Amino acid sequence: MSDTTLETHPLPSHGDRNSRPESKSGDDRPFLLRYVWWLVGAGIVVLSGLLILILGTRPGYDPYGWLDWGYQTWRGSLNLGGAPSWKPFTYLFNVPYALFGHFALWIWMLTSVSVALAGAVFGGRIAFKLTAADDQHRYAAWIAAVFAGAFVLGIQDYFHYVMSVQSDPMLVTFCLAAIDCYLNRRLTWAWWLGAIASLGRPEAWPFVGLYGIWLWVKVPKMRWQIVAGALLNAFLWFGVPTITNGRPNIAGQLALESPRECTTGKITCTWDRFTALNYLPVEIAALIAVVLAWMRRNYTVLVLAAMALGWVIVEIAFALHGFPGVPRYLFEPAALTGVLAGIAVGWLLLDASKIDKRLPAWAGAPVVAVLFLTMVPGGIAQVRAEHKDVFHERMRTTEINKLAATINALGGYKSLLACGHPVVNVEYVSIMAWYTHLNTGVVGHRPEWEIKTRKYPIVNFIPLPNGWAIKSYRSNRLNGSPALIARCSKINDLYVPTAFHPSGVLIQK
Image (cartoon, rainbow, N blue to C red; front, side, top):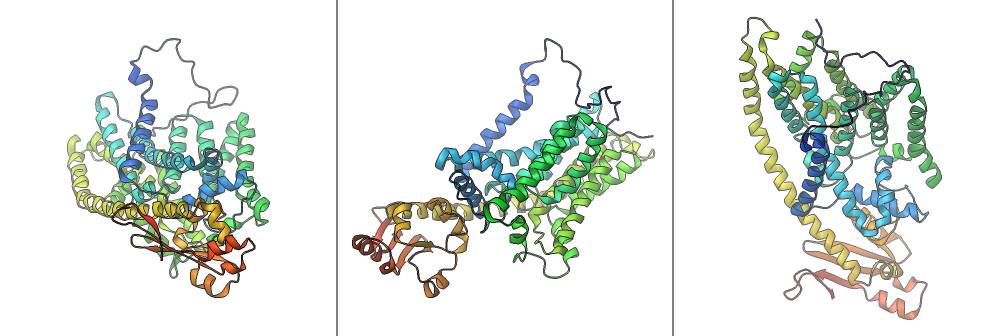
């Protein structure tokens, strides 16, 4: 006897499964119920803005590079030859955001954090629907949703990537949203959410491709959208790099030979990285969900488990090919693992006698309580680790702000570029590119090598514990006026706080 929650409804006569019954002319539901998900979305945006302001963090290396892509695109000077590796997903956002100048940074931060946090909502919605509780036991579905959402946000180092406004948590949200839309028969939304997620991670291609084939057969009216999504992916992944650099596979080329790749035992290494993303109790609960789904003949949940495992297998194949297979590439299956664990919680609370007639109906409640208690020590440890990480990121934010202030104190980025090629430690290259409006591949990232071997003028930036040191080299080779050469040759400054200028001031040595 199957209790599959996703019933196979007959297709409408015209073959479009997106058809929904016409709504009544009047909706008598309370305001909160009519617009509940709009209100949830608005609440997430407000919460995200507050987190950004309170925690005071800044983007990681890659997002500054993505912001620079948008700026360079509008000026026809985009060059993808340097890190970060090409990701069309972020390009969709940062090209229009670049029209807002320096505010693009804040718009991207708000977008990234908001979308990332929404992943918990979609994970909860999936668990709620698949728990399949009736009206009298709706509490079980709600508890399942809360657990699933918490497990998504509780992925190892997940919050770090959220607050450093990386794209990986955003992609988790798009994948979960695509699944949620499919479960709710919104097939068009599911397709486009999956197609957009494919612009961020090639691991999604097999799953979106299979879904596209299914839609091609079952929903003929969507065929033009399937073709459009495939062409969009092909053009953005391979067409843009060909136009800008003449290298269609530049993303794959930059990803190879990463220092973070598994050097030995790539299969076991990738698997270990995946299992380390969730706590053991969550993974055990996910396995319980798979067992219960098999017993209940719930093929929807079994497919979700197969998708999670399939993603890991695809990642292993990429690792064997030479790609790094870093843990954040496995956030999506880790999130599905959390959703499965939430479903297990809901099923255990519903009625344990459905598992075994010898068990009382309430027998699942103690199991859920034990699961919760075993998660508490790990949760506390993760909160402490995130608190420590936030402190580190605040220190980094201070250093980034002082770098911007240093450039302004030198007369702005145009005055800096007039004195030579900017050079800085590799971790600040994309930030320097953003502040100086250069492609990241142009900014010097090996100071000692640049100083000893290059012949052109450079301005070297050296990070200090409380500011920056700046020194120019080979200013006599500048192609400019004597006054410019004289000004640039004197650059040997410090930008540090003083008693009268606690935020920092430029001091000539």
